[in-house]
Length: 535
Image (cartoon, rainbow, N blue to C red; front, side):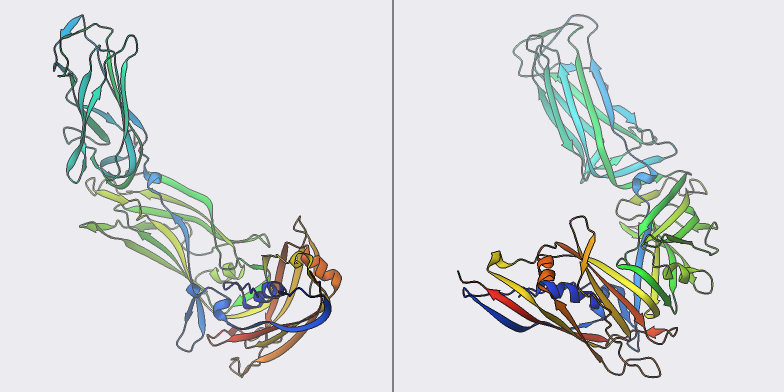
């Protein structure tokens, strides 16, 4: 017997999948009509079946609170700068016809450099997370040539990048060619150029010779050119150091998913208290100034959007730079409390948002190059703005409706058995201080509801509470659902269903706390009429 239990779902939502996954029976090869009374589900469910464990923390009195972090925005390294592809081009051609002996050194410049276009940015060092250099040679010389190609400014474990290359001679009118791509991952690149005084500059060195294996001198004409291109591409830094510039970046308008209330589709909730922190973590060695233009909670089910009202909006936030020592980064933090006394954050959360929208503006290095070009950034340690939330599970719920779409896969065992009709009975011994109503809608191939299972009002009764509104005992509710032959046939042909649960707290408008020991015992019993076919 298969039982489909979805741990992260609210405990009442378990009833639907359990019901359907439990209706299938393995029957032997006989042929008779029979009545079968069988327990389908017997389970005890607690608060951890309502919300993921990672969201819940218990207070000293065992009452629970939701602790949740929602990242709004994280700056990417390529927001500050992007190292584009670049090519260093070298060419050689003689001024007249000459004879070059074996081993003759072809006169190329000792080093050649290129400077990246990074307006306002002055990089001195990068460590490559991933990236490549392509070395391409085209030779029209009628003899093999040899090269030592180096990138003195790119080192791995202190050793500069260097390769030895042999290029074949021209054959007829077809040049000799060599092309190879090399991985630069892990290399440290000094971008101060050959003099150590430049910025954003990478340089290479090259020595070229007529092959020493040649048996005689080779005649080279002005048309016998030698062209060398080395292209740096897809360079993504893991680390960068320099001056990141006094620049202004607009962030958003953008949206961030808020998953806490994902399954709530209707109803209202009142919370006794809400505490948020708008927090900025800066592990970048760069000062910044942030202006928060807007933060809004958005409920796409109702179309309601509520803007944050707090002094945080439009006030400049100065963000101090991080520091590093021996490869260890020490971030800086800024935190701004949002609570019921200084903002409308409670109303924003009672909006049951599934999204937050935000719009910000960030100014980098607002005081200029005060670090002496020692700003730094790691690709995996980035400045982020987040909302840290703590909500006591003390609430009033009014027709709060949760929904989930379930996949159904009910077969008739290849026609060897079928259920004529019968009943499914739910026994719910409820230890929670709220009641619930259930409904399961069967969907057609266009996801349109065509039928339902609970065709009449049904309520799982809330548990009784004492004067402190704490549950004193569980309350049993019995709900019996008739299942006709036509409804069973509809179930067999349904691939998806929507399960909705609507619940209310008792004694409204008093706030009800939820405690860690609360649970509900659920038992599902099927009383079916089967037809079993002989084979």
